[in-house]
Amino acid sequence: MPRVATVSPNTPLRDRFIAGLGYPLRGAGLASCMVLALLHCLLVAPLFIGITASFALWAATWRYAATCLMHTANGFADPPNVGVDENPAAGNGLMAVHLFATVMCALSALLYPPALWPLIILFAAMLPAIDMSLAFDGDVELALSPVNWWEVIRRFGWAYLIPLLLNLATGALIVAAALADHVLPRLLALPLFGFAYTYLIILNLHLMGAMIHRHHERFGLEPEAEALARAGGQDVDEELLQQVRTVAGTDRRAAIALLVTRMQGRSAPSALHLAYRELLHAEGLREGLLEHGQIWIAALMASNEPRRALGVVQDCLELDPGFLPDDPAYASALAEQAARAGMSRLALKLSRGFLVRWPRASEAPGTGLLAARLLGVELGQRTEATVLLGRLVQAWPDHPLRAEIDALARQLQDGPAHA
Image (cartoon, rainbow, N blue to C red; front, side, top):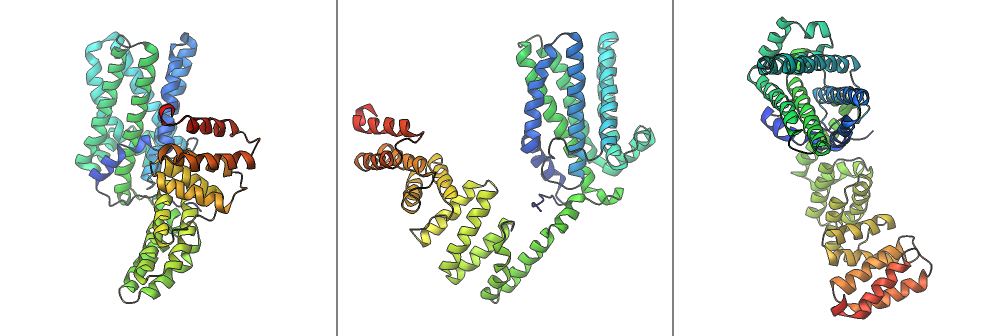
């Protein structure tokens, strides 16, 4: 089971707010903001198509935001995947209520403009109570009761001002978008408005979810993320880490023994890996560190964390200058990652080691070209780079990279003045 990223309900609301600013810009949240922003360009279409697109975008935005609210209320740290609908009734209710509020504001703007801002303030004040009530009760009739609004506000106290202010900001954004239409080209104003609007809606409902999660016991909720974490053994990992720290105070070897079996699995959390390496370093167990390095590098690459994997590679190279990840695909990818990060000597060490160990691997031409470029262009060792390019041509005469190999060879032969 994949590791579940959770948040403690005891996390201060201030910290949740600061972290929440980046929530819509992570994973599926960012993808949703970008796609929905681009789709706002459809609103320039003829009337019927534009109205249909507007309604569809409205529905998609609020349905995903409602899912974010429920996901956060259940203790999950990351945005939910697109297409996940944890509470369809709540999503439909949220969409209907907010559509009603928007229609009322639009009619006010057209028919009686002085009532627009009072309406915006009224909806900004009551909508968070309705949204959160729908999240933890799922009852539209109850959510629309003024008595229930007061009860929700009473339970949250001053924290209720956070979604209220965000709702005001969203209302102001809608008004600003109408004005921006006359200042910016419509094809630029629409996606900018769409991105900002989607960001604020997701942020707003995420923070409402964080408030529900923080007070979940008051509402009789059991956060799903915690249950999944327990089912996946994450609580067991935390208990193991505490046990290891306790035992390490008197017997580091015994603490290492507690971690050995857990380290064989790629799903072990980073905290356990770090604790294990710290103990191995303290005991001077060089071979154990190198063996664990291979395991952790594979785990980090499998979870798409090449930068952290490079850190483990560097640690292992300090113990053994000839160290190389034991998977050719990972070794090649890490050489490229090091080059992109400006770590030329590390990239060269990895690519050279790769060519010695796996000269006929499918990644060899690309890794060899990288090594030659580092040698000739970055480090000025043109002769050695030219020799390496000649070997690549001899070993892979018809490879698709042949043109790039020949181009680099010509560049190196032309000398510094033409490089």
